[in-house]
Every structure is written in structure tokens, then in C-alpha cells.
Length: 318
Image 1 (cartoon, rainbow, N blue to C red):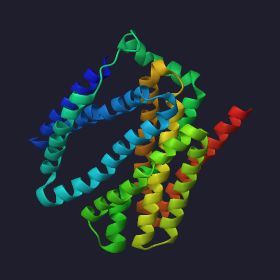
Image 2: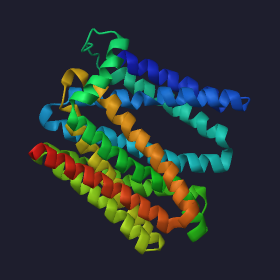
Image 3: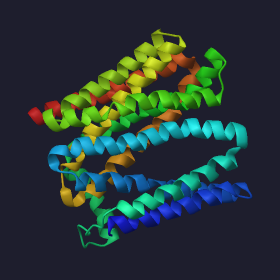
Image 4: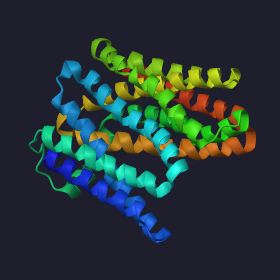
């Protein structure tokens, strides 16, 4: 499909799904509306490969870094806004605000998005079947996905239990924990620099550095017990996650131009499966060992990503 048309329809559907969630009269409708929000909220993953396709090859890392900074800043700042609105006006107001923001952002999308020609004439069913072929034939795609799944598990694990830790250690509530998203956004806004480095020197150095920075962040948060240590660790964690993500996307988007969206489908699906696993295991670690166990788990996920990265590089060298 024309990407402009697909993005506009999906963004409009997201707004309607959020309205339905905000006015849901019972739990059944809320569950259906939540599923609709999840499906339509993937509109961001239509925009990222679109931007990569519009960018010149020598600027692709920088462009993807800028767009993904927006995506992850939205995730983190949304926690701060959602916590504030939810605490003061309730959960319905939170989803109502989301609907209003979706409607507001639809206008510049309609004004500025260019039209695009479809890159393939295959049917949707044939394209979905081809995902297995792409996964089998592209080892760089598999390695990038495994690395990012491990790193996103590390990243999401922290945000899953952060409010519990802040309440237990500092007596702060959900609103304060949400404000840590603003702190994390500082690290993410620094990350387009990683995209420029990837454009100039290749993405693999940045991927390894991102893994190391994330592992270091958990050492800092585990050893430096105060609020300042937590802030420093969160900034480094988000910087490392974003740097590795941009560089892995740089690798993936360079593989096959005609299949960029399908490559993104596989990469992002694997990444979010890793995030779900990180959320579950971090909750379990919190129950059995508290904050030290969570920091140990997060550091192990980051080191796992680093190990996969080095294994892939050795395989390429051979």
C-alpha cells in the first residue's frame, strides 16, 4: 500500500480506539479497546522504515536515530504524563488525552507525509509467508534481533519495577517514578549522535558500546544506592539502549530495500518479545531478591546481548 495512506488510516483508527477505551463501560469493552490500541499503535513502526527509505544511504543512521528518539521519548515521557494525569484525574482522562494527542498529530501527518509507490505487488498472504524465508536467509537480521531482544529485556525490566523500588527505597509514588522518564529522555536525546557515528564508522562498534554502557548502568544503580546513582544509571541505560537500537536498525535496513518493512516486522517483533520476557523476569526477580536481584538480571541481559554481538562478529570473520 501507499505508506502515506496506510499511516493516516492507522493513526485515525488509533484515535478511535483510545476514545473507546476512555469511555469503556465494562472490563470486556476495555480489553477489546486495549487490543485495538495495541494493533493501531504500531503505526510508529510504519513511520520508521518509511523514514529510512526516504533518507540518503550516508544519512540513514542519523535519520533513523532521530525518529527512534521520538518513539522512545514518547514511551518514557508518556509514563510521566500518564502518571500525573492518572493520579489527578483518573485513568479515563489518561486515555482521553492520548486520543486528543493522536488527533493532533494526525494533522501534520496529513500535511507533510509524501505519497509512496508500493515496492511489491505480492499479496498480503504471500508477504507474510515470506517472513520465514527472510528470517532463514538473513543471518545479520537474526543476530540483530537476538541482541536487541536481550537489550530491550534489560531496558523494560527496569521500568517494570522502578515505581516499586522508588516507593520502597525513597517513599516516592507513581508520579515521581513517571518523572524518571524525563530523566531517561536525556539519554535518548543524546543518541542521534550514535546514528552519525554508525554512518561514518559502521554500526558494529556502536552496538558493542551500547551493550557495555547498559551493563555499566546496572553496576552503578546496584552499587550507588542513592537517588543520584539511580538518575545516572537511568540516563546511561537509556543512552545505551537507544545507541544499540539505532545501530541494529542500521544493519537491518541495509539488507534488502524492497523488504524493509518486513525486515522491520521481524526485528521489532523479536525486540518486543524480549521486552515482555524482561518485564516478567524482572517482576519475578523483584519478588525473590528485591532491587539487587533486578540489577543483576538487567546486567546479565545486557551482557547476553554483548555475547551475541561478539559471536556474530566472529561468525562474520570466519
